Every structure is written in C-alpha cells, then in structure tokens.
Image 1 (cartoon, helix red, strand yellow):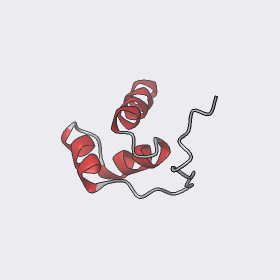
Image 2 (cartoon, one colour):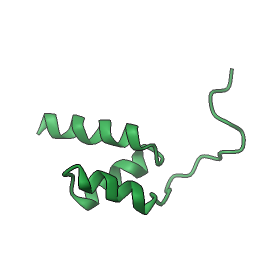
Image 3 (cartoon, one colour):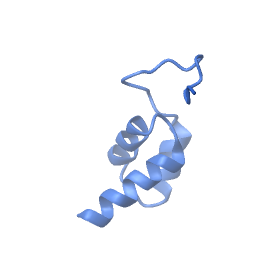
Amino acid sequence: VDSYPPSAPFASMVEPAEDSIATLVSMGFDRSSARQALVQARNDLNAATNLLLETQSHS
C-alpha cells in the first residue's frame, strides 16, 4: 500500500506557505525555525508545530 499520493512528488526543498510561517511565528516561534520546521514537515503545519515543540523541550 502506497501511503504517498502519486501526484505529490518528493521535493527536497519545499518553500513553506507564508501564512503557515506567520501562524507559527504568532505561536511564539522565531521565523527561521518556523520556516525550517515547515520545510522538514513538507508544509504540514501540525507536523511542523510538533517538530518545534519537540526541539524546544530538548533544549
């Protein structure tokens, strides 16, 4: 079973949506961290938030 839709090619560098960055910044994360998390999460706002929270709790 393929969990990735065939219409979504893997991109190593996906430019995050500006509104997603703004959402994370409004939650108190700095802009560069928010952008980096969105790139890692492939523009999934929930996954990016989890990445940022995990990173924050380990520092």
